[in-house]
Length: 151
Image (cartoon, rainbow, N blue to C red; front, side, top):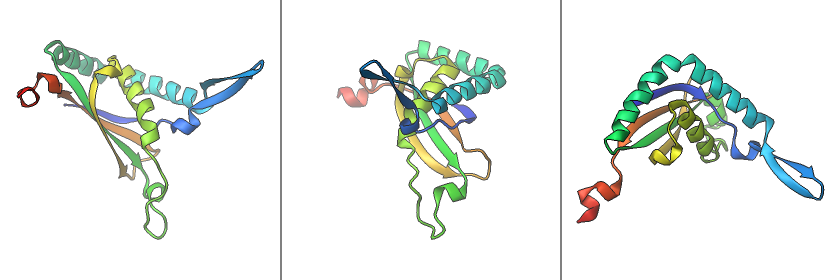
């Protein structure tokens, strides 16, 4: 099991793309927020290179043995970002942050995200700021290799 600590919080998918006009058509490009996230990921990778080197080596060894990966992402927000004053959940959707998170972590551990066979995500309250992602990566045996699904 490997831990990814204080990974940058990606923008929502709604804030990840910008449309530009080219002649009579429109094209979507990465938004300013998405490009800023890419830079934050690179800074995070540079700061964590020593531990990432070990993680990459251990993951590669497990994948060479036929395992794939399962990833659990915890989206960490301050109390006031998650809850209203009446203690009701705020509209804060993490579903539209998943792809950018997985792409960023895959880039950090140098594994194509096609090897993420299982994903889970959860919003959690933290007193650490700014908002960030904590992740746990574990090995996963694909179901087609499991006796349970073959019988």
